[in-house]
Image 1 (cartoon, each protein chain N blue to C red):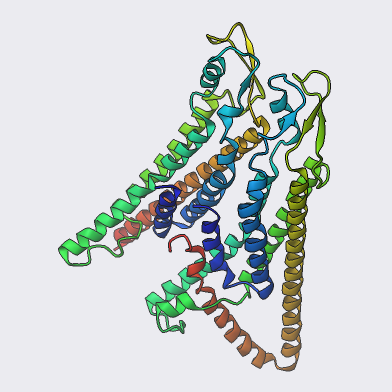
Image 2 (cartoon, helix red, strand yellow):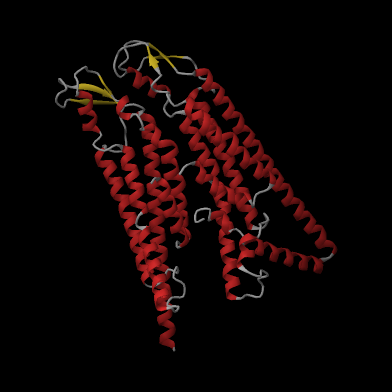
Length: 262
Length: 219
């Protein structure tokens, strides 16, 4: 039980994402989660043991460490990754709900249902239209908000993204001002800048995806409006068919949320 | 044997839950179990080694640590996760019992063994009540054992063999407090979800019962 479970859950959502969404997911797993697990955790592994203060006063080291690192970089990144991954679950839940509705219709023998069997409903891919568009767009918006909030929290807590070698501490019970030395400051700075850079790339990808979805939405609307002007009846038929397609699509998401049950 | 077992258990529960139940599973999975394993466990890893008292008296540190942490936050957190997830087993057992019965009698006894009605509804409601009860009990335990949800950086200890009163310093108190508050927040969220699910189910089935009786009267 670890990040692999998150990978299983999000992997299902991947099927119903845009291309930019798929790139974002890849960047998240390879350049953030994997780097965190195989490299960054080891760099910060001995952070308190090797945090040394130039004093023999018992308790001074603990207090100074706590003063300069209220929450460790590693934990903040782990929380950021968890929060940033979670909005995708909104999409997964929406899709699962629609698929459940379609399955119910299929079981009742509803003639509107065009699928031959449950397998087809389960495997059918989803297009991001209708209410799913709203869910998907909100999930991207929340992702952006969480990324921005965590980056700001980072910047605010650590006064920038650099890890200094030496910190001066005069918290009680340290006598006067004491020099404290951080372990592996350069390596930590390198990884911090790396993680911040990848965070920024993810923010850009999310903004691009948001713009893409909005553009698609407005283009579709203007096409509809133009069509309606030319062929009012024909447009209604097309619309109804499109709506039916959307409804059919919306059922096919069982596998996403139920990365749990698989 | 590890947390994978709990993950599989929760995945099984997901199949027989209502919509709110599935949100509860997602919250427990991601915001409690995952956070516990990838972040919280490491904070408390060396808590005893890093606990330092301002004294050279052998045994004083051990005794003071034991006095202030009869059971470590992280162990209590793990116990809470296990106890809160376990009532869902009642539902799984009941569904398995129904399926066995159908197999044994070789006929369809239920509309669907996994549908929440009749006896399974009672089991489900009991499991929800137990889950909520355990959550509250553990929150109260945390509050009583640690005087609120604070982790002070300094505690004063005068247990034998410490000479007089001695200053003892806890490691990473701020980080521990942040995660403790995170635990409390997610616990409260889970309590709210359980209570909503309970009200929703009771309301839904009372309405159904009432409608059935109303229709029968008119017939």
